[in-house]
Length: 63
Image (cartoon, rainbow, N blue to C red; front, side, top):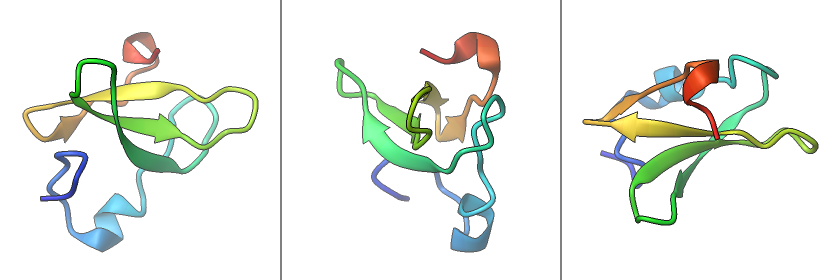
């Protein structure tokens, strides 16, 4: 399992993109220490939660 808690094969992990901007997502943690995926978009860096190892890539869930 990766640091983000997302347990995927690397090729599948590389396919994950921000559903709003299409930017690459990188591992991170939020203020509470929970795993998140962070968009690398330079002007719209959205953060998506990871729950039970599953990335929630819904625009409404982004911060």
